[in-house]
Length: 176
Image (cartoon, rainbow, N blue to C red; front, top):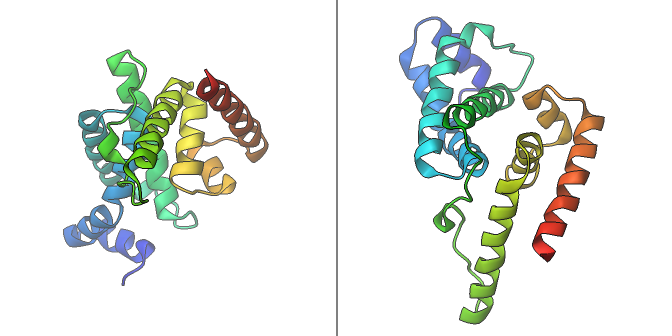
């Protein structure tokens, strides 16, 4: 498998298939981040497309010292913020089918867990933009604090505080 830096180099040299490979490699991840941040499938699809269009036009600005996914997710985060500003609204909780199905036994247990997951999605959607993005990247995408700092352009110490406060808010909202 060709590494990302080599694919970027090939794409900058005019190879369309190299950029297509990057899109195929990261389209699901970009879509998931956009969906968790924005809450609507249509907005997430548009934002994912916008992300890859921006990445293609700004590919020469990619710093090969940074991991490509981090660079791409920072473009996605900015595109998602732009989508919210254009729409002039808060995000919506993602549709239930955006999560993998519950594989645990028992219909009652599954129903309770789905209800709790829906409440959590709604609570995450009510967080302010900065906290919501940090939560999505950390807990849904599994990025490290250093990676999130790179995506958001925020200091790690600030992210720690932001995530702590977001967890407090989520806990409070879930108790309501």
